[in-house]
Image (cartoon, rainbow, N blue to C red; front, side, top):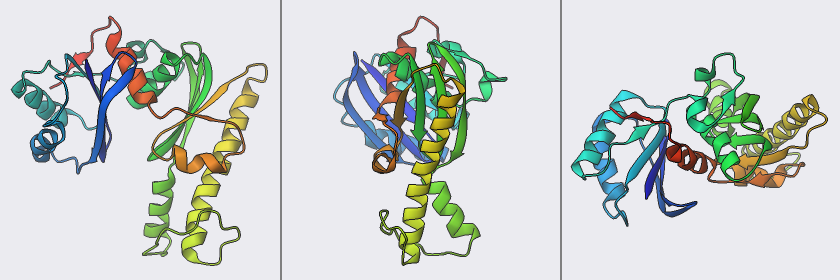
Length: 256
């Protein structure tokens, strides 16, 4: 029984995983404060259905979080958490990035997740705080792209353009007749058009290859109706990849 954690700058997602499926899952927002972790973890996992025999983590917060997580696990008599670094080999991948460690560990997990689901050649679009594009060919990462996500687009308009106090408007209005509708429709439809266009350019770079197009991340469902190309939504790619990595014989670094 594995406890899998995907820890971002503002949100922690977790799943209790057995075999190839989750038995229990949850998520919560956080402020990144080390002092908050003991109470947050206790509240979240007080009613965990089963004790994990392995804890595997991808995270971006660093030492403070790792120390608190290790202390919490020890207090529950759980195994020491294993934190996976941004090392493609830990996920059974070869990266063609000039500096592979610069690629976010969550992107390696997403690609490993695609492999775990049986996708051999894929363009993977992960729609989170940032939207990342990764080209997977076999176990090789051939590169990708990064652009701001929907939240960053809205936040930049709010903070830098003088369009303040925006409320969510209609995303299907074109042309829009209010600022709320203009922002919502512009961001969502614009993001979808950008994804379609960039994926088309990536495909053109390998004209003789047939790629599966995979969509993941928190905004995937929101963007899916506006995409012109055919995508498959794979909501658990990070967990699928982390589960695969946790099962490899390579030893992950203990937290703390």
